[in-house]
Length: 314
Image 1: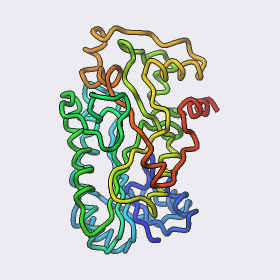
Image 2: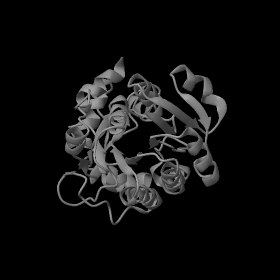
Image 3: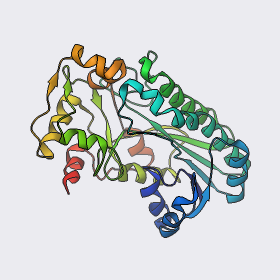
């Protein structure tokens, strides 16, 4: 099939392009400039330049590609995403792409006659912090987000609403868990891994916030499978081992050969983390991946972060 991959040079795009090519697809991959043209050609993609916020350009470029499937992986993260006090500011461009970019791409996909649309979303802190420790796709998203993350949650909700309301095309939203592995913050050279090595990432309060991880290669493979499988709707793309911060963070320190993390009372950490950061450390809910495994036929190579984190030392 002909696949238009918007954001082909991002965290998911880099491992996804060669997977799609190996699966026999023709990939037209976009980036914001010509800097990555040679890299995209080297893995078998046809490079194009795209500004996802320019509706006319999106319609023209996607239309010229004549894709059967459009995949939305555009983002514009300015930093590591680690400034929790200014979380929305770091995700400002990404949130524009979640709103206008999603609308533009869905319109262009339909106009080009594409039969399928796949958009990136996120699971973890967006989940409502009520009920069970682990939520499936039917559970509500947070109705009372922290001030630092309101605009970002609104962008995520817009993407998912646009996908679920799309007509004339089969549309899916993939809620990825927290990425780790090459090219991510919890990977070689990553900012968050560097914080762990420097013992600058503590367990806050009781460390009860439940996180769901996914290795970047597993996330890319789930996306490749979604090209031809799965009913329209929302899918959690996470490993099978949601875990509290108080469990996974000390394990990561141990795997890296670092002394155990410091433990900081919640009241002391709040001025540094804000309400959003405090929620992530103490109150967020994990995600259940049953639907993705059942409908996409996806089984992660790293079903637990326990196995995947061990690869971070090699």
